[in-house]
Structures are given as C-alpha cells and as structure tokens.
Length: 506
Picture 1 (cartoon, helix red, strand yellow):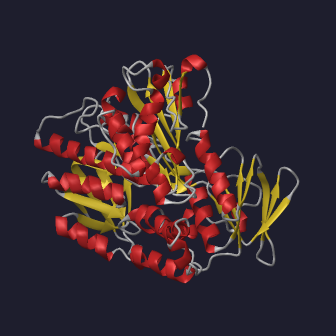
Picture 2 (tube, rainbow, N blue to C red):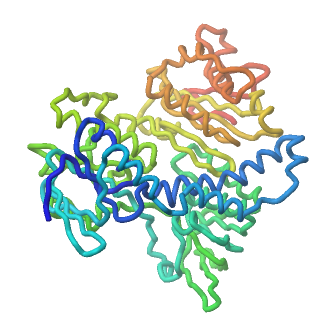
Picture 3 (cartoon, rainbow, N blue to C red):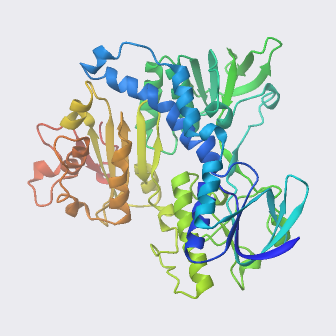
C-alpha cells in the first residue's frame, strides 16, 4: 500500500514529537513512525526516570543539611517508594497518554519500523508483517536517537552488562554495582545506587566529566566518596566474566580484580542509523548524519530540492534532549515555511537555525553535587585562541548558599572573552545549583556585555547572588585598581586574566 502525506517523521521521542508539532502547526499533514513507545528514550528510560530516581535521596540529603529539618529526617530512604514514583512518572511504560496527545493535535501515528526507500519515500514495516510506503510531499525528518556503546572489552558483551535502560528501569537494586565510565550517565547512576545503599565502584580511565571544568569532576568524585562509593581513576577494565554464581568479575589493568553483582557500562553513544535505509539516498548506514544549521542533511539528494532533515542525537551536534527539541522546533518551523512559501530566517540566531548548538549548550549532571555548565570552559576557549578572563567564586561567599544549607560546598566560574567583553562560559557546582545555569545561557545567547550585567541585580539572599561575587572578581568598571583585581575583603573570590598565564585560585 502507498499513499502521500506532507511530512514523515521517523522516531517519536521528544525530538520527533516537537518537529511534528511545529510542522502540524504550520497546517501540514504529518505522519510519525515509531516502533517502540511514543515519547522515546527520554520519557521512559533516560531523563525522566533517572531524575526521578535521583530526586528522593537528594531531597533527604538536603533536609539533613539544615538544622531542624535534619532532626526530623531520621528515617532511611524508602527505596520501594522511590521505584513506585519512578513507575508513575514513566506511566508504567505505557504510552497511551503520548498517543492521545498526537491525536489531539492531528498528528497521525504509524506503528512499525520506518526506513528510507529513496527520495521522499519511507517504508513502514508493521508488526503484523504488512508494509506501507509513505511518500512525503515536502520533507522526511530522521529522529531515531542513539544507543549506548558496549566497548570491545574481553568478555563484556557476554556478561549481560547493564546500559542506561537497565539501570533506570531497575526493580531490585543490586548489592554491588560496578560502573564503567566517567560521564554524566555513569555518575548520575552511581549517585542513584549509592543513595539506595548499593556498594558502588566507579571505574574511569580518565578524570570525571572531562568536558566540563576540572573542578566539576573533582567535586563529584569527592561527593560520591562521601556517599560511600569507591571512585577509581586512571584504571581500565581488560576482561569481564559472568561467573556460574551470577557474579561479575572485572579484571583491571593494574592486576586487581573487582567482583560485583551487576556492571553498568556508560562509555558513549552511537547513532541509530543502521537499518534506516540511508544507502538508498547515498548515505552510509551506521554513521552520524552531518547537517547544516537548518538541520538539513548534507547529501547529494538534497542539493536541488531540500527534503531530508535530521534532528536530535542522530546528528551528533549535542546529545541532550533539550537541545534536540530546540533543533526540532527550528526544523519544524522551517519545513512549514518552505512548504507554505513564507520567508526563511537562516542567518545566525534566526528562527530557522540551531545557532545555539555551537556556543550556548546548557548541560546539567544531577550527581552529588550537581554540576551545571553552559558554553566554553576556560581551556576550550583558550584553544580557540581567545583572550580569556576567568572569575572563580566559592559559594561560601554567598549568604543565600549558607542559608540554603549548612556548610554549603560549591564553586562557580565565569569565562569571559576579553576582547568582546561578554560571557562565553559558566560553570556552577554545588547542591541544587542547576537552576542557576539558565541565567548564564541567556547572557551568552544575548551576548550581554559584562559591564551591563552589573545592572542585573540578584535578589538577596538567594544563591543567584553568586553572580555579584563573580562580577566583583572580574572587577567593576571604573573601580579603583585594587577593587578591579577582585580584592573585596568579605569575598574569597579571585579574578585573573591570561596575562598571568595561570588558572585563578579557588
């Protein structure tokens, strides 16, 4: 059977839902193809369940940091209640609510595996064995996401390792868990299970959170150790075996052996492009898809009449749900504009481009403690050849942080382009700092001069007052020389420039 429609979206995760929604809002007929649950990885096996699993133990730790609440919080974490709450948030892995939403906005759902079959053609293989060919009048959007990578460690694939799905859908936490990896998924799951009382060992070849400022990974290593976990850096797993007693034995390159009940692997992702029919449009199956800022796939079949787009993880620009949804809104609006003859806004920061992917991607790791960052690190900015100014502040200088929790431990950093005078990076590390990152994102996207930020007054006593301390560390415009160096007697913050050729002190 074959029929036409305006737009076909392969993949109904949050990214696919958003691009379909924007195209539908433009008045186009849209069909979404999905072979699993509508709502995708984020809704059922990633962002939503992982943050739900993290929240209860984090709330308990937060209460215990505040006298009065600490005396009331005398019980232990109810793990079964945490898991039941997780089940509620993932709708018990039932997608009827998401399907009802598609119906409510007039988006058609085709259940089955979708693959390209040449220009503007998608074949849907349904579960009952039937096939349907959809011919798109205007666009096909690929939004199939990514899968975890299982590294080629001897015996690992045969040892029934956990990936993120197994970890977030756990029904009985193991007594001992080995975690291979030092990125966001590894550390969030290590935090979850340490909060459950599991004996957790993190094994990482390099420093933790390598894409963030070094102090972020160092703080999480200390935080996990404070929860009773073991964090081993600079080690590599060389062999894994599932024993007859159902234990997992991990041999390390330093000659030691670790025994656990389960092993979680979180060492990277690969695109879900196998079996997607890419070869029918001169693209290579298994590869990430190269796109321009309008999310149009760079391919010969797109040269004359643009029709093929790729949004979300599959294009490898920023493997984060919120960034994929941002891309989806731009692509969906662009498809609608092209189809209806409306003007295209393709200049940087235009309505139909994903400009922020290059310089303003916020990322939060909900570990112990939280790490929130956006833009460039000091080191990555220097590698770009920028004249960098850096301000570091200890949250101990912020009254709101001390009121929030006794002995609040955390650190903030601003990275400023010395030539432009604008913020190009920010990092916040500490309990409950995740909400601070959006202000930095706005400053970066808006290219707000640092001198103007002095007039954005943070309310007292909130943790947002860290912005005032950071600006003091950089130096107030027109201030005396001593103050310009950040030498406030009541603030331990410091400011430096690249002229010093060294990192600022904590």
